[in-house]
Image: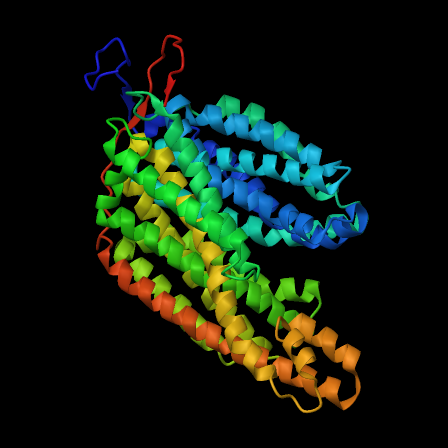
Length: 536
């Protein structure tokens, strides 16, 4: 098809004002938040069920790793594919298909008879999640054309995401106390059975620019490239050697495919993703801020959970309760985000969020081998509020800067940045932690070199080695491991603070003020059925 578009190819869209986009737009927000809640829940609910799954299905070490990681891996890889497909064939259509697939995959996971079957079901859950996540943000962009209302909607949306991440382990623990491990997946099914008809009735259908064919080869290149990069990053985060062929080959091939994808998009008359969005300083800066914020946070959460359990000796439930203030503060920041954005503008809001998160991280460097509940409460409150303030301002700026026709692609880029930042954060901060922790275990009196080397892998392994040694040598190794871990935690926190400072400087490129003009929302006019066109 040529670059010239005639009236017979695509009907002219009719324009509806923000208020006319549907008096039920707040109902739409509720439906979208339920979607996000399910995806956020499923990302964390399995963590507490891993021991029960291991006991029942008896997976190998590699199978267990895939059971946990295949969901976020598949989801991150397919975000751009389904985000741009929604722009083309209809965002509501992709979202409803995602609902159905999520429900079917949840049922399959709940009754999986083997590790391989559970891995397959979790992969299908990742496909469903990739269909749901970009669609929620792009539909939200459509039904809230007024930026002030959209900021409030995004605040509620992000608060729900924080709730889902926090409730996942608690809900999983409750279900495991009363039912079998498959019940952590069954909770999705009734919600999906409600969401499908409600979404079909209330959610508006919307599409982006449908000129030209959908670039199926580009979509597959992006999916394969992201799969390779995310897979390699997750292996690095899991402590795999950086020089391993299973890490290097996927990383190189994935990066090469992404470079070729970018070159392909620049040459095409009708690109899958309009890379000119990155020429807008606010859009590219917002994406960078999302990556840096997640990079600093996720590794810290993992390390903090280990600190609370292995150094302070708290139970998993006590650990969850100690981390709960972080979630509550994040919820408060999400709900207050719209007001903060109107008052201070994107630049000052995101800078403030990064600086507040950095202050929280520096406060937490006072953590030691003894419990200090007041310090942890204060630090986690600052961390949750600062981080959510940062992510709120960055997401809102990114979504507002993207053209309405590219809302699905923009949302997919934002969610992909989130996932990549999280994966890189675990790999980078985990490597910093290991580098600072292991040297402190060399030369512990009475401990053989082989035992010291094994103890240097992780604090949990150090405790196991100390238990086998027993006596004064075991006690000395346990004490040295705990002290080394606290030292490594301090070094990691300082590195994280540096990354957050870099984010605050980056945020200076965001607009100073929030432009709140009402922009019309495009709702496609009724269309005659036509054959879907897909080209290479």
